[in-house]
Length: 609
Image (cartoon, rainbow, N blue to C red; front, top):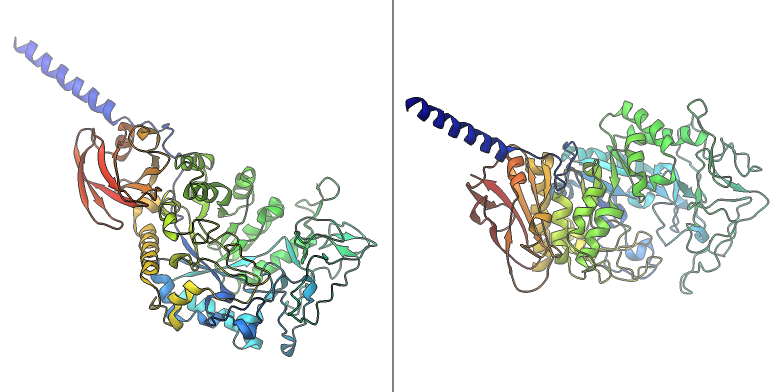
């Protein structure tokens, strides 16, 4: 009898162990679990349009001159401004428009040649029509002859406040009137040694259209009231050069990048895109572009946002980025790229640190905000970029895109709050905000070349009204903000600081909860996911529904998710809200969690014993 009792006890013990083993088994192939190695890439980038950031002028006259509408300066980023940016949670500042570009502004008194207005878009000009890769935009300097020193001081101030500096690198094209007067003496200018009789040559910096003359698009006209002495409908260029967006015509259209010329990286575009470069035969343009990157790296820049990087061969990036990182191993390269089929190539072969996630998460979130797509499409998005989610730069605004608060996007900046939480917290990769976004800037007004399109102009002298309220005459205390704008600022400041201060966001795994809750809540309007490490477990729930009535929902965390987090089945845990309301709830892991969601509400719960 005694032996039988011992045997029964042993059997019960073994069955218990077996049940425990079964309960704690982790299915690493779970389709709801992001399967990629997680590392901390949670940098927070503040994109500023340098020309507009510090401008206190409120005139905003259509096609206004620099004297009429004013302009921001590098010196506007003083200690007060930089401390305010740092306080919002930013780790990096992308100073857009630093490098000298073509403009209608007359700087001849400083020895700077006048640009031809027929190939300049807007009074201020596009920052992506580079006129001199080795110089700074004179509009941004208080003391124009010492503009390089002002830039170096800006870099030093930014570093002093514990942030890093990113600038543009525009490798695909330059302004039609490109000519460097600031290049180091040992460097030859772009096109200086080109054989202009050849349409293509591996060592030509540009592509030529022999026996042709460039024709300005006839549709490109300035208003009658605007008198610009260099605007006469003619720009002398013979032979004509190929235009920046790969247009091989001496007469590009108004919709082409007609103000720019395409750089030649050793690919004969007109003849099947045949590549003439090899490790033993490096094109001249490659060498000159490397010199430009080295120049700015030596100015202590911490990163480059590479404009239209996919229009430059991936082999060039594979060649140049490692060489720049030999000078500064910590420098980062961000690719503007829109072709998902090339993502892996530009990361693995091209050696980029980060890629734009515009075609993926940005487009998805925008359509969800506009009620044109389901919140569950977010799941499809992260699965499509599985393997490199943490290297995708997430954003909801930048200089190319419409302002959230514009009627072209959402009309109400609060409608993007749930999307911004997803954008910032879904993965461990970088997040970017465009200045003014954090206070609900609408991007309104017909500025000049930039029209009423829901964007803040990059072509004109202008000011940014909501940002000016935040700036408050240079105090950067938000003193002029109205109450709704203060609430928007509080939301962004809280969210961005949360990103960098929580281990589960910087280093945690991702588990998507949509498929486990198809019968518990409206998966088209609500999105939920887990981020977790051994030390921290977070539940994130967002409600895209703007309906005025709060929603009572049930949410289930599946058994495998519990096992992955190291939680026990049937145990009671606390949910402590960390983001905005600070409330604490209790739940049992084998039961659905009861939650009440406010319209457009976002909730971040810490799961604790």
